[in-house]
Amino acid sequence: TNAGTFSIAGTGISNSGTFTISSGSTVTYTGQSDDTAITIPAATYYTLGVNNAGTTFNQAGSTTVSTALTVTNGTYNLNGQNLIATGATITNSDTIKAQGGETVTGFTNSSTGTVTYTGASTYTGLNLGNTYNNLTFSGSGGTWTLNSAVTANGNLTITAGTLDVSSSNYGLT
Image: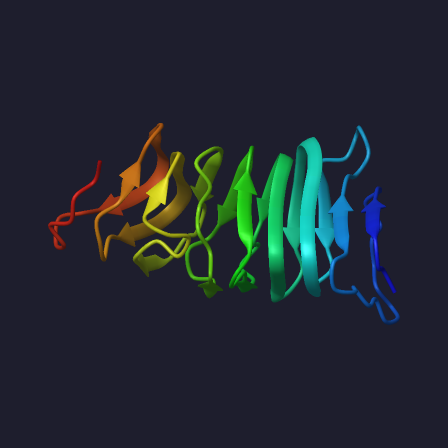
């Protein structure tokens, strides 16, 4: 049972028992200096954070965050899994990655960081909202068709895939 602040480092994170996260607690995955990828166990978190530059933190299953999701350094990858963040504050100082087909509820982008879509299918709308700081599409074979106007306050980058605005006539600013 975690009732305070719990920082976890390393790549071999697994949960073979019961991991109870108490109300008011913070779990921060930090990895180690040479980590490139860490799998985060699916759970219900009060406050969830990731913090290790150059590391991708892959969500292992459907995850709920009730108060805050903080990406200080590294990439938080939804990894095709659902995210429930109703009522949570999202602070993204680095990168949040999604394929585009995940079910995401209660998510509001912060005014910093980058959101990257990596899916290889066809998606209607952007599941992480319509306002971004930096917005990137890098899913080879992926097509994202807007279902409302989208704002990228920083950079809009398309390295792979297609952002289709032809049939919707929604604004992209």
